[in-house]
Length: 143
Image (cartoon, rainbow, N blue to C red):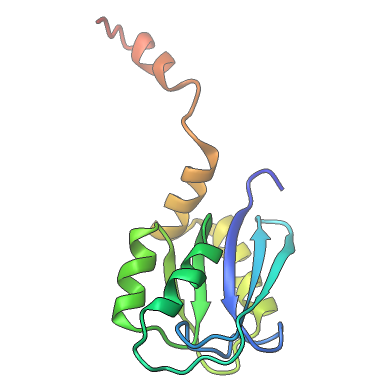
């Protein structure tokens, strides 16, 4: 899955996205490309309250390192600010949304033409185009 991006889902049952980001007891982390997906990790945190305690966010944000997005039912402004600063797109979903359906939607979007955040995530994973200077040379660009 060389073109896969990592995404995380706030879930209690590994089937539905049914958790608030800050108080999420567990996350399922997947690698997703246009054709397939694979669960990479299931992380457990135990019982956490929605109490405004910012310390609990740092462990979750560390878990999300390398992820392009995190899907959750809700997320606070402070958490949004912190994860966006790490290059992670927060995505709020409707109650009852399944991980399987969300991965399917993501794969469809990858094939049909990605949104801005997804295109950015895909391009970051690809790295620079090795032929990027050839076009300049073809145009007669000279130092």
